Length: 327
Image (cartoon, rainbow, N blue to C red; front, side):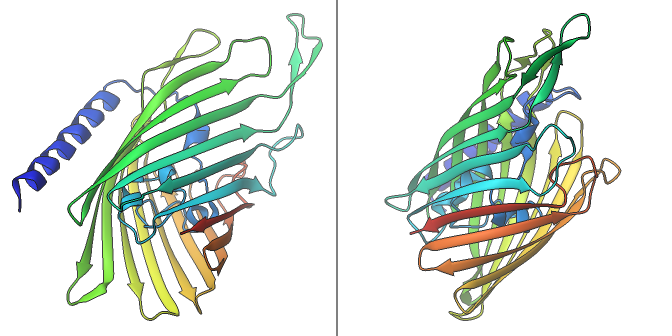
């Protein structure tokens, strides 16, 4: 092991420890920007929210961005939207619309970027006397960009910056702020069969200062730390099984969650997926999911269906779709 590799590992550990210490010391039970925890693309949704370290993922910026330089491709992009099919109110339907992508020209340095917008429903307003005062359509936005760097053949780190804005659709000043993600990932092979590989990672999401609500209340971001793993098992050119597992903890309320998922790629063009997500808050956020996909050259089309869980959660019993490409 070279001195450069040793120093890089110590640097990664120091950054992670500092981020955890800062985030854990400044959290309460009331988070802002809860849409930041939503699954983005249909592949992730079909795996129950797992898959943060699966390589060659155009939506890597929303998981562990370090994995963007540990795959076989040089870039990719995706468009996604959802959830569709379930509404918990009569005022309309809220959905997430977004895009993500990455580019690694030399396989060692990578750039990741993304944009998300959440909203769609209208809410009724009233004046101080309780009389109707029209409607408003609130929406949330996040724009992110990051950089990933691979050290040697197996280790990579990433840093992502995020701008967030929550607009209430009225004359109330929007809530806005910045946050950061820090990630690290490792890729290795198993035994003599080098085509059988595994990945492990850790990343801390949405590290940032407090946001101020419309009433002056300080709101914390949904900061969390997670560890991830994935196993890639290509049996032939036509058949491959990938398994993924993520587990983490939310700093703002101490909630512990875990996701498990698997996908089977067959005949080079078809994909089927299944996953399960469980949370420690009496199972209110637990759910199962299934998904499918179709691959034509570099183009990937995916859909996922999320079922079960809390009936008041609009993400349950709903569909997420995405389309993208990997070069």
